[in-house]
Length: 414
Ligand code: F3S
Image 1 (cartoon, rainbow, N blue to C red):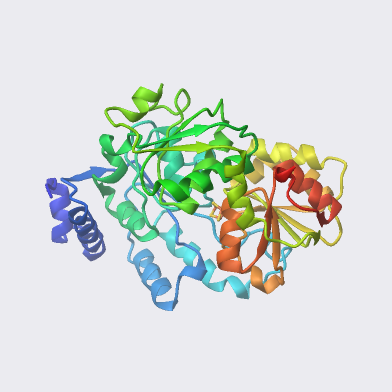
Image 2 (spheres, protein in one colour):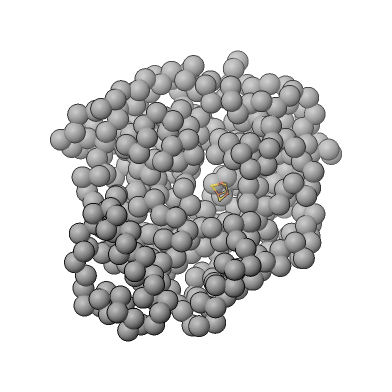
């Protein structure tokens, strides 16, 4: 790999052993992927910062980095954790349960990572510009960065994003390279896609079929930013997809020709209403009957989504046997508080959480076994990590289910 003088000095150890090790790892990564050189990054986003993914040795290692005054070289945000730092007791947890999480937070923040714990930091704090090279982990973020913003990131792991943050560099490969960003698969939409749950089902269906190829969606009309986030999150749930195009909407695809460039589609996928039923057959395995737990906000909700939820809950009350969490980031909750949205959600007996998500939290301690949600990603991982049975429906239907306290089956089947 060609390295600049400064990168060579990092590799030689002029900036200390940690920077040296981080550069060694990145050079190795670059060599594996035939990257010709490194690029400077303008931001990083690190996941894998939850206590469930660490042991004493790894926490100790991060604490040593922080006390050794290793600072990240680029603006860096942190991903969602398993606790709401303000409300964890209200949610049924104790501080002892999160002793390791507090240590991790201090260690990362000690390296000057911004302690805003969210999978949607682009709403409030970390918003890359078109064409910028960045190093972002958490599977739902690369599709947003690459597709919606037109910035450039590989599908980073938490560790490689940390190394990139420490060196301020990432190898030039994957979606950093323009030709790898072109469409390879044409997806023809022949049914209405309306709610974020529909976008999630679409993403799940397509993600399973495209591998790491870039899909181009033909027939999606004016999706909102939030809908595109839920599309990308699901594409990256059922497959390793980190970029997609929507002609006329995403910035590198003014039309189909630009989306594909010189490529011919290697595959054409036709999406009909029955296509969306396929993921539902797997994800809607919860028995109809009483509901115990409802969660919204995976990925973390925007302020507009919270306003929608508050509007749907206004004047209603969630059934007394139902626990309902709505996840967002701390800055968005702050704004929701100022707008009176949190109060409406609380008055209806829901809890607006910040920093956390259902999947990352130690839910098993609260005894839930089932989940109703509008998020395909959340339902999928609740099966995998929490052994839950689940039901997925539109945001509006999920709220009506929370109020009724009963799941009667999938409205999308109607
Ligand atoms: Fe975010 Fe947790 Fe979902 S990290 S994308 S809310 S699984």
